[in-house]
Length: 171
Image (tube, rainbow, N blue to C red; front, side, top):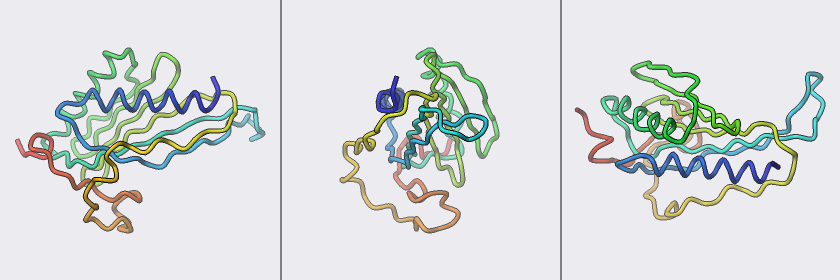
């Protein structure tokens, strides 16, 4: 597998996870990266790694975060992914899993309910990598009212801002 094939596989994993969440949430694209893999002397090995990221733009209320992670966990297990770590912290829960082909997936809840989803490939043959695709409907989203330069926003995308009758509700 080369880096472009790994990027395509990471996109497939992201799409599978997104499609497994009901009711649906709105996602935004996070920064992607494609660093080279190095040996113990930090020399290039001719291999590289892909990271693809998304974040949830829908507000997930504190009361619904456990349910959200439960939905994702069931989806991962159904897909044959191995859950390798679960942090059941009430405010900032997280999960990490691996796929049968060696990709690592992490889902974590951060500051004020930001939900981050990362997919990391194993080291694969180095190659050129196309930019990630633009998410369908991304252009039609209302602008985020939160200041993306807020140091507490934890990234260039700001805080979640779209409401869901289910995910944003208090129980």
